[in-house]
Length: 359
Image (cartoon, rainbow, N blue to C red):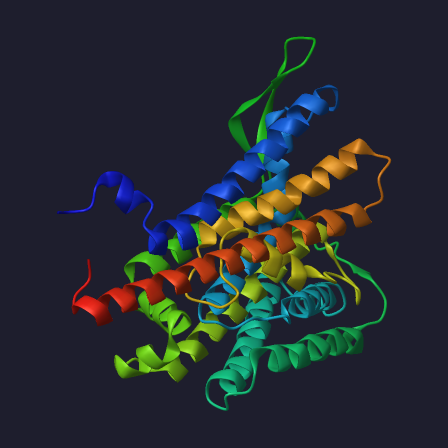
C-alpha cells in the first residue's frame, strides 16, 4: 500500500533532518520575539521598526551566512569570514578616505578580496585536499594581518556618496502614529534589499540547479558522488569561490552599517555565521542545509542581542553565552537525529537481508 500522508510527513529522512530543525528554529525565533514584545512593550519592542532593525543590523551577516551555508553543505567550513570582513572594511575605508577613490571602486575591491580568498582557500581544500579548518584558520590570521598592515588606526568613512548609500531610507507603508496623530513610516536600508535578494537567489540555486544538487550530493556522501560521476573537486572549489564572493559582499554591507574600518572589527563574526547556519538547520557533517533557515538563525541571534540590549542591566557577553547554549542545543539535536537515521538504515538492511526486499 502507498504511504499515508502522516507517514510521508514523518518520514525520517525528510522530517527529522530537514523540516523538524527548521520548524524548531522558526518557533524559537517567534517565541523569543513575542516574549520581547510582551515584556518590553513600553520600550518600543512591539513597533515594526524594531523588527526591521534586525535586518538592518544583520544584513552583512545574512549574506556571509549564506556563503557559510554553501560550504557547510559540502561538509566544509570557513572560519576566515570575520577577518575577510575586517579586511574589506579597512580596504574600503583606506581607498575612499586616504586614496580618495570612488565607492564603486571600493565595492569592486571588496568583491575582489572575497574572490581571492575564496579561490585560494578553495584550491587548497578541493585540489590539495587540506582540511578546511586548517586552511581557513590560516586565512583568518592572514586576513587580520593584512588588515593591520593597511592601518592600525580606525579610519572613519566620510565619503559623501558612501554616506548616502549607508543612510538612504526606503520607507515602507507600515509604521507607527505618534501622539499628535502623525504617521511615522518604518524603513529599511538598501543593504537589507541586497541581503534578501542574495537569500532568494541562493535558495533558488540550491533547490533548482544542478550545482545546488551537486553540493548536497557531495555533503551527503562524497564517495557516492564520485561514483555518480560528479566532479567533486571542481564543485568544492566553486563553492568556496562563491563563499568568498559572498564574504566580500557581506563585508561591504557590514561596512555600510559601521562606516569605518579598524583591526578588531568583525571579531567573532565567523562564529556568528556558523552558529546561525547550525541553528537554521545546516548539519555540521554536511548534506543538509537551507539559506532561509540560516536567515532565521541570524534573526534569532539578532533578537537575543536586542532583548539583552533593551533589558539594559545585563552584560553584552550574555549574547555569546545564550548563543553558545543554543548552538550546543542544536548540535545535540543533530547528533540525536543522525543516530536515529543510522538505526533506521540498520533496520532496513536487516529486513532486506532476511526477506530479500523492503517491507
